Image (cartoon, rainbow over all chains, first blue to last red; front, side, top):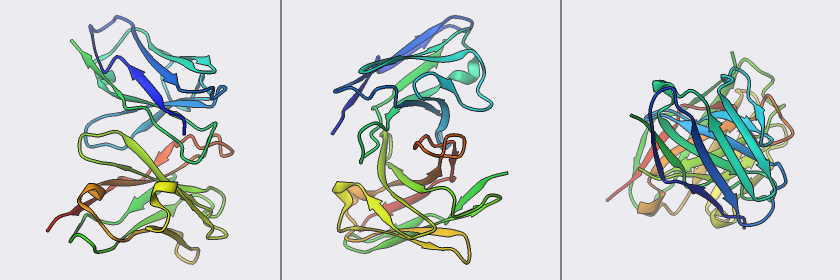
Length: 108
Length: 121
């Protein structure tokens, strides 16, 4: 079973700055990786799939990169509404479709 | 507008069973596999399993095999997740979700609102 490790656990960034979140897979998942964010009391929202494809309606300030075992979600020019927990998810080796443990992004 | 509407919160005793529903609307119900995830309080997301609504064939995660049953009622566009032998660590919000934008891959762009299942004596 593939394990996804996200870092850092918590990230605090000022509005307008850039945030970089990492997701490392215990073995290659090719580009079969997605990113979500989740706000309190809400279901997760898909941001990125296939490692770098933005989902419909997702602002251009969200971008994904990487392949194999190392992936990055970059949020340029942070806005207050970006405060959330961010999860990566692999769908290369299944079942199960594992998620990472999450990175909590706080806006200063 | 694609919608997944789940049943309401449940409180169950240890050892009991729970059945959560997920009703689909505004799309062709049998086209997309429905996946179930859960999230324990303050924890991350865990994939529980998936079902093909057209055939009713389900694939639970290995840790849930023998305790999870997923079914489909095509007459009312609703899938069900039943979990038996409930334990306190089954306390979680259970979500159904589908992948519409990229249906060949499980990227979940539409989610139900979640159903809180509490297991407590």
